[in-house]
Length: 249
Image (cartoon, rainbow, N blue to C red; front, top):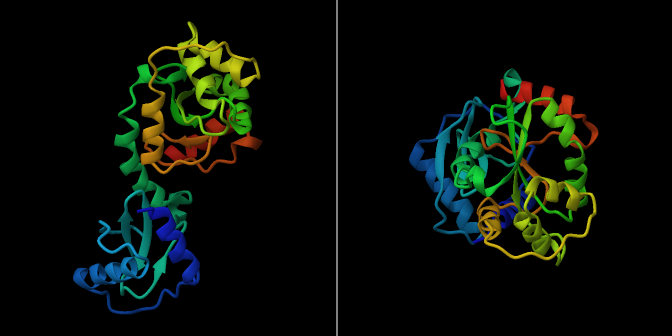
């Protein structure tokens, strides 16, 4: 079952974002449970597992469905998809806060030895980045590496070679190189890589990417597992570090 498609269908069918926060008696847990089941059944997802949690947003309850989060009003009459931001917490995305807790144990199954890492081990900030050697935006991100490591950011790369037919072999060539960091930098600068073969963690990386629902690169996660929404393309390494200071404090 494609949960993203289910939620996309719900999004397309309801007037989301136009939720009336009215004063109404909160529904019981059992009533909310039935309401979510009714929604899922309507979109051919009967039987999908979900949990309903308290939310720090007044008047809302949080629903976790696989790798997705949406919100219900406490009376069970309205559904909210998309970002719910906490003004008092520096516009923190409440859904991402929850998803980070779900993703982090999955991301942690990839050891440092199974990634290509830039920056010092005790850096102030750590980013886990799903990357494709042939991805132009990944190449742009990598050009900022010197600035980011100088600004006390550690970058841990996981491969998601899906952009072009040669992406997988290029990732393999990088991993099998004697100096992986140098090889990745050269590959992202456009250097043609020599074909190589060795044991790699690339298939494991791709499986984790699928489990997390990642379908594009670069996809960047913060240390807590939440997905970065920074417009890094227009930021220097120092500006990225400053933004991370705000997000992580």
